[in-house]
Amino acid sequence: MSRGKAELALVFNVVIWGTTFVLVKSALQGISPILFLAIRFSVATAALLVLFRGQWKSRSRITPRMLACGGLTGVFLFTGYLFQTLGLQLTTPPKSAFLTGLSTVMVPLLAALVYQIRPQVSEVLGVLVATFGMGLMTLEGPLGSIGRGDLLTFGCAVAFAAHIVTLGHFSEQMGFEILSLTQVGAAALSALSLFWWVETPHIQWQPIVLWAIVITGLLATALAFTIQAWAQQYTTSTRTALIYALEPVVAWVTSFVIAGEGLSGRGAAGAALILSGVILVEMKPFQSRKHL
Image (cartoon, rainbow, N blue to C red; front, side, top):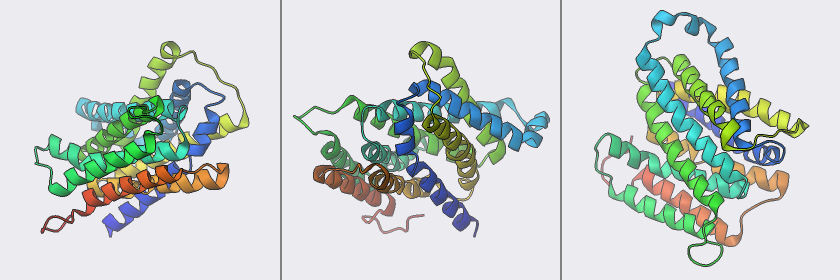
């Protein structure tokens, strides 16, 4: 029952994240990307400080190792969002969502590397299929013409895969409240330390910018990553990644309904291959033992 509730909660996260691609894309016209992340994660950190004030006040329960674990997880989290937000300025929301979905394929391979487990045939084949699909989506011109936004988004997929594996590992060792607060806080500090010298910060206090900050800060960050930190106590990193494979589908539908922005036929074929690669990795049809 705990696993079922945890995975249902992760589906809720997918809906939140999948519907915010269009919102963030629109908001970035009025605010610089790293400043947006700095405000977003700062709002989320403030909300979690209030929500978990009892845990935070009990400092005797918080060890330096917990802070280090949450900090490492937060660095991966911020890196993923940094690449995704920068890439979203240069590519479309549905393409960004599907390329981000490559993290689902990378999770079992990264977990195999960390835990020194040899990748299985289905995992290797799934990566190859998904990579070919990514090529169909991104190679719109001559060979080698991958856009800078596509490359940045691919980097975000790697970072998010590392975040899922790391979070899954540490969620078994510490309370989800402290893990959620420390990782979001570390992401906020990372963004605050960068925005003032990496970019020329600017902001226009338009309604779309304010809505994006509130929705992504409170729902897509504070709430969603608290849910994930709690849920990964009861399910595996691989199953978490499988559920998150639904995010590109939600983003594609939302982008089409709200902005009328979909994928071309070639892009749709590439997206289908990416999802096929995900299914190969997660379902592992070329092995006899049951996948957990």
